[in-house]
Structure formats: C-alpha cells, structure tokens
Image (tube, rainbow, N blue to C red; front, side):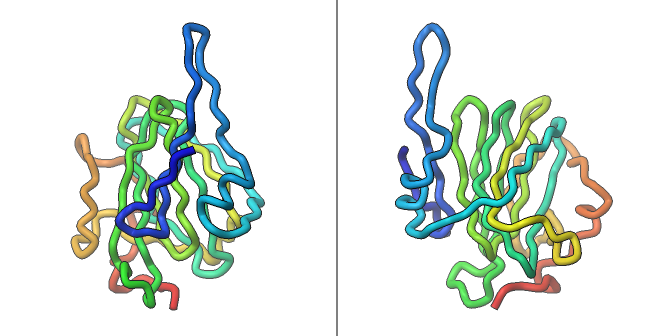
Length: 181
C-alpha cells in the first residue's frame, strides 16, 4: 500500500497494490497493521456506512463536534470528488481544505482524522461510497458547514447546480461554525 500525506499532512491518501489480469483484479482493501503503521496510531472502527448517490449530489460538509469521527473512505462504484476541511482552531492548516478524486477505477482511499469536516460530490452517473468511522453517528452533535462558503473557496468540479439535502443547503458559514479547540 502506498501512502501519501496531502497538503494537510494529517489527511492521508492510501493506494492499494492491485493485482490484475484478464480474469479481473484483487487487492487488500484494509489491513489493520499496515493501516495503523501508515497513520501512526492505533484505530478501532465501530461503524461502516454505505451510500449510493446520483450525479451532482453533494453531501457535506459534515462533522460531529462531540463524539468526533475519523473516517476511512472509498468508492466502490463510480467516482466522487472528496473533500476534507480542517476545523481544528489550533491547527496551522485551520480553515484549509484538500480534495481528491476517489473512484472504483483508481481504488484510492482517504483517511480523514477527527477534527475535519467532510463532504463529496458525485462525478459519475451514480456512485457508491463506503466509509468506516471511529465513533457512532450522533445526530445531536452533527454540524454542517455550507458547501459553497466563499471563505473556504473549495474548487468543486461542478457540472451544473449540485443536488443538496435540506440540511446541507442550510449549512452555516465557516466563520460561524462550531470548531474544535
């Protein structure tokens, strides 16, 4: 597995070694020991989520202010542009974002530690998105930052207007968001 720290070093791109031939492919999608060596700490995942969305659906930017979740995310069908925003006030990269295309074809995964808001937009006709989390979903503690906040200036690869949930359309501006110390 190849690991690359992104411009926000705590967010790590993981690329598995894929074995392909005319019959198909095989790769190790998760190995606890290799994963922990790559991120430098022990992790326990407690929940796995699977979503399916159509083109131009934008989900996010979500995080939990209590019971924060670290996430290991990947796409098993289609493609998305995946984004992590640093919401840790004490971080030198506070308010900065990173984005990567994750797809069934490239098989890349993204490690997003707690303290980040997370979102994605679907680039393909449909996409199936899987993510492991280190804590359970806690709707009372969930927060949402507005996806198109001009101060964040996320360069979403839009193809028309995104399709949003009511909650995501009412996210708060970054400057008004509840953040981590």
